[in-house]
Image (cartoon, rainbow, N blue to C red; front, side):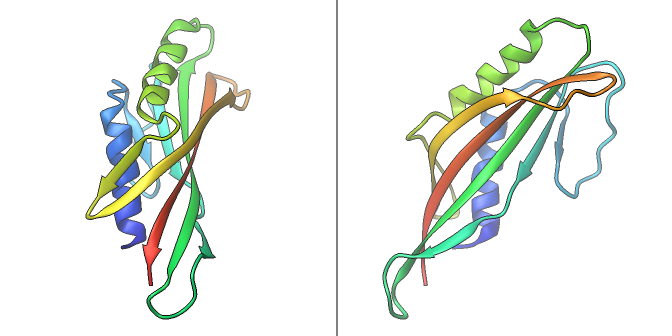
Length: 135
């Protein structure tokens, strides 16, 4: 099991959400649109917690997937909230995502107001997840 499989499972969930806007992933080339919605996906630190001892034990890994949906300021709320609804439908509490044998479980997906920027209005979706890893 690996961080790469965790990332691929989470990104697979983002793709399954069918958000029809350009999407920026960490450390990837991206040109920010000038007057159309777009999405930023970030996988924040993943922490380990020892569950069982020994070389054949396992760890629980907890992390946060942050998805920020941006729409041009003064463009209304329907586009923004529609995209947020699509994402939250994929990342429902209890949902499972997997890649390469790594199963990622969703604890919750909470939304909140994003930063107030000059040209963008945004909502943040924080997806709390966990997975188990054999040592």
